[in-house]
Image 1 (cartoon, rainbow, N blue to C red):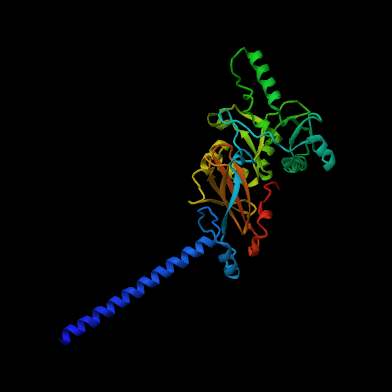
Image 2: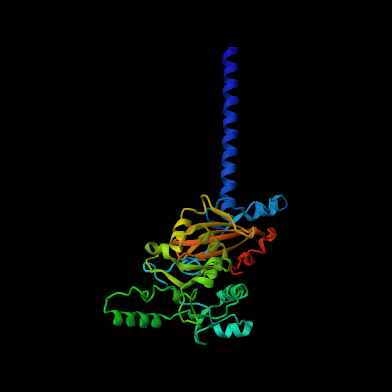
Length: 349
């Protein structure tokens, strides 16, 4: 009898414990559901190492400023066609057509530059490449005592490129041009490219004293776009006169590693945001970190991870995504994230 009583008490106690646990579970579900109903649904991109605003506020003082912290920046997917790293070649068309152009001669006059000139006052280039170009050719004059460089070609309209293409076909009798890029596929339509000649010979082979420009243009963000040993990759014959602005970090890396732009853009695809990044230090001790973010072509916008506490720049590659360059030697404040808009760095010197 006593055994039965103990068993009944034990069963009753177990039943009571189960009921209490069930009641607590139901209460927790109800409270969670109520809170979710009262919370605005805000989607966040799946970004590794990203901090919520609450976490940032709670840990501001403890954050190691040497660690780069990322957040998602929503950009127009079509912006993959913009930026100083857009690849334009025989297979990749240029699309945007919203360049900020200036008359090069007018800009040179305003800046008091006499080390070189443009062929005429109608010649235009992207405004952002003027200062780097001025610095490059000013230093060339200082080093070699030569000031006969003439920029013979800069930005070209679609109509101008078509005219040059048609003229070459009429001259050669062929149905394709080996000299002039197809309309829409010329770097000159971007405003980032310039062709050099000299007022002394009206010819430019990049030899002799002018070799200095090839060997130093990377310091000012330019590359010799069509090198003699890369014609199989660029599909363009050697053009010693054709220079392209890409920004100092990228020009440095391409020059030091002896690769052309096609090879560089392809290489960067192997450095995605969620994998290993391309990290290097230039000759001035400036540190850079570069990674690739594939564009979300099914949507109007793409979430691009960018640093909260470092300066950066974003460029499309004109094909399939975005290239983010971190200037890791430059740090910005985190509190309130008020510096977010100002963290985009200009790659021009």
